[in-house]
Image: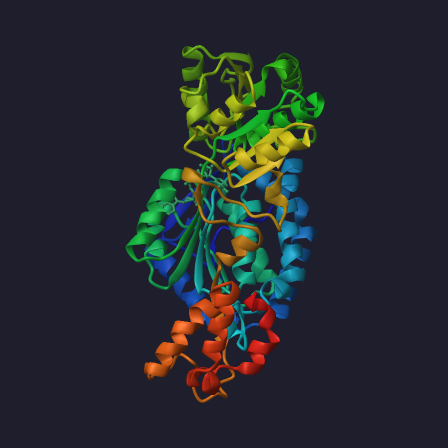
Length: 544
Ligand code: NAD
């Protein structure tokens, strides 16, 4: 497999003075030494993006759509190679890389390649104020400028693609900094964009250690930062941005809860929870990290969950039939082992897993824990590993209260066959996304938005609201300019006083007082000379 081991700035390969060593987490062997940039290289990337911005912002929507379609074509053609690279560098099985990285990426490319022009088209709005009704008014969605896209290692294709596609679709140019642990995948995406024909400087993919990323965060020409990663670094990003009042979107950690009602479909729920907790070895911001199950279904559900968990094939991510690979980094594996050990010391019981395996690779077995309490670290802090702690609850009130009792609130799921219970869970679970009878999959739906409440982040990515984060939402009020004066222009003379005195009750009052005020209003000189009588008559019904 050929690796892209240099940054791509203005479509040129660029070397830097630093090195990022990337590993295969299944074998701990070095995959590549990637030439990494320093602050000077980061500046160069911002400058390239800035230089490319005016022409890209002026590029017609249809041309942007064509380039996204061409990127999609390359991604589909090279899907196998890319999925293998994701598996090799990140540790998830090849088939899963296709499912959770390539599928959402292709879907978002395909969606914007078809719908960008509608989503960004001028959106006319009829003014509500009667005196403004003659305006041609509405919203423009103008690009912001240079956007920094900083992404984590857990979905090295799925996450950056959603953000890159929206950013460039909206007419921005980008400095894209993938996580060091999956830098090869990030640079491969940059190379695909270059081959798809994006003009130089529109997408700059940089191998840049996190420690020198402040150069990008602090740069006055970076109009917005899209950051996906941990709460700690997110806080750092927000502080740097606050210093220069630059906006940022933060997609941070989660401690997602699944609430299982007594009437849930047992088999579907067991399968759904096992997938939602162990997919990508649990290294998913929206992974199920807490289960609250109503007592009547608990015993049978837990039994089935353990059976399904024990049937998972843990092993070589490159081999067909593997359900779960290693974790991506040694430090992540150590954190998971620490949290499970601490929970067990405090009384939690593993029904399966819970023990560090021997041998190479950052493996940790899928683990089901019961007898957990909400004060344990494993129920409070993000685990980001293959652990499913299950707590049995007496009723839905308790489940919802405990699910919401977290500093996080990224996504949540409810499992029930009752429409009424589903509606209650959708309303009461505090999260940016709620799924009923599934978990985390809305990530792959390009019309759905993504984001969290509390420490899970700020703002949204994906969907219409994610797109709106990447544009200047500009309201345009267009008066044809053919009248000598608007009613509110000077002078504030006695006639204007009468006009204003009558205008409020005429517009907002009711009953006979309203009618009397309308008559008074229409007798003022200001009304006769300046109000557009035709517009008013055409919209007369709006007065009542
Ligand atoms: P991380 O915060 O360590 O790194 C994220 C990115 O920030 C990487 O590209 C990293 O190189 C960069 N970075 C590191 N130091 C930096 C600095 N000082 N300034 C600027 N950038 C810096 O996170 P991670 O370990 O790569 O990813 C795991 C975390 O990401 C988990 O907490 C997970 O929940 C979260 N995450 C959230 C979402 C979401 O959509 N909300 C999605 C995926 C992952």
